[in-house]
Image 1 (cartoon, rainbow, N blue to C red):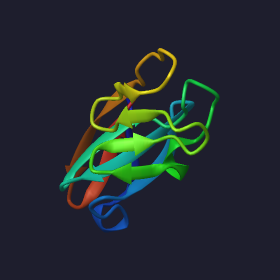
Image 2: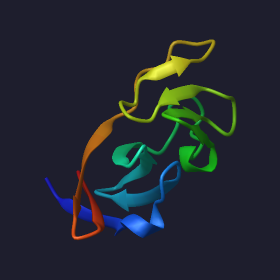
Image 3: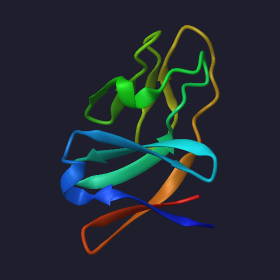
Length: 102
């Protein structure tokens, strides 16, 4: 596992998202109620970048076709088709720096 810097905690305030490329993967990081979560940033329906969508609580809405994902787990909440969940990643915070492990 590689530990990759996403940014400072001040760069990802509560209710906001960021994204990074790590290990050849596009990863979204969300600050939900002061805790950080990381999931795959690419919607597996049609390839949209999810960080361009809307985050409401832990519900992340895809900007292209409206699929709704749980940003804390990567699980699908709603979409007319059955989609696989998104991969999730471990997030750690050390000295105000946010890291993901890939």
